[in-house]
Image (tube, rainbow, N blue to C red; front, side):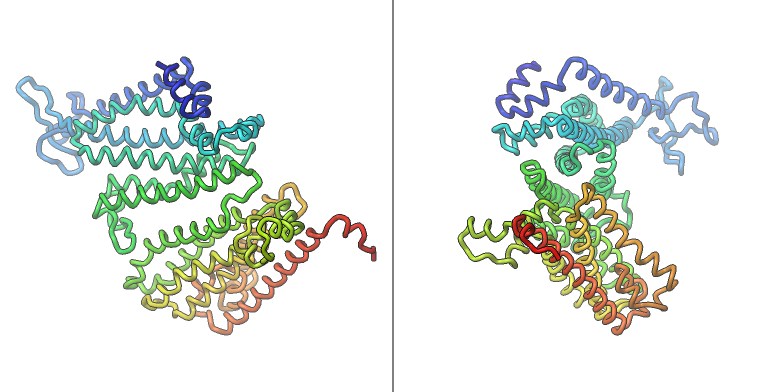
Length: 537
């Protein structure tokens, strides 16, 4: 049976055959099956201990339990009734339903944690041994190799979950769960695993041989906790209460079918974009994670998703006093998005050096057209990322500003809001220029230094401003110029004069950084013979 499965997998996907052959060994299969069965037995024992028994101390002379069938008792479940043979009558439907819910959570956690850990561990070992480069030389397509890893590497995890499926189906059927609900769970669970598995592979490829499986697993789960909460909310709306998500004025959990379509569509959308980056990084380990064209589409998708959850607070404005705080939160979320965009769009030193030295010849040789620097900065694969970040900022502004202009006015005027957004955009460009300069430095740990520089640029200015000036009232322009989004917090003191000073100060900093970057690129673009023939001063 196992050999037939392996042969079928080998004919369809050689990489899948390789993964299954290395994992589906009798010892591994026995361990995975034993752990799954023991876990299910322990779950049933745990729930059996919650059933009514004669050893339970009665309350007010009556035995109560949450799985009894008598009259409801506040905080203590239901009164237990017995039949003619003095056997307690149990609500087995509710018992199996609750057991199935716990089993559902465990199955999802095992699939996510076990699958992510297995994929990252396998890929980092391949990188460390150098076998991944050997696989790249094989005639298989990147789609075949990556899909083979996703389907084959967590094979033992799939086996353990598969053995729990009969109990899960039985608990759902006896618990009275409709078949459509059960089918929706399995479809969304598979889509969720696909999303997190592709993200884990991308994080592992980006980290190379230094990837730590446990660290990537924790990072993936922490980054995806809002989605996990939303996933559980689809089947347990009471978890959210009055805080249930509203997307483009539609309460998601009032229409379960559309809510699940929404989650499934987002799973497919973001899996597609992550897969594009994964495929790109697998083919060329030195390439940026996404192309500039892809980043524009990804940014538009992310902003539309965010806007859907925010607009119902602006039309109409429910709490005018919280207007600036809400926009401050949106601005910081976008800052995190742009920091990720800076990281994935900024090329390495070698790529920038090749671009600076050979860009004219490569473009003319490939297309025969006159070289266009502007077009190369917007669309080019190896050009600096600063212009691409500016284009992404323009996309965000084009999506948000029309809605902010027509929204109700809260505790900030619309002019103050637009001025603050302009200053936030300038700071993001400054962060992008700083990151590109550090990445272009002659340092083996340039990425680490760039990350530290960005952390310092975002955290040190507010700390130093607070130490020196204490509050925004004493130096509003300095706060607004150096601290991201500070006018949202000190809007009472944010005047047009403070905006003008901060704007010109940021412009001066940005010009100095860009000038430094241009000089560095020109120096790197000089040919070696030109440098040798240049007279020494």
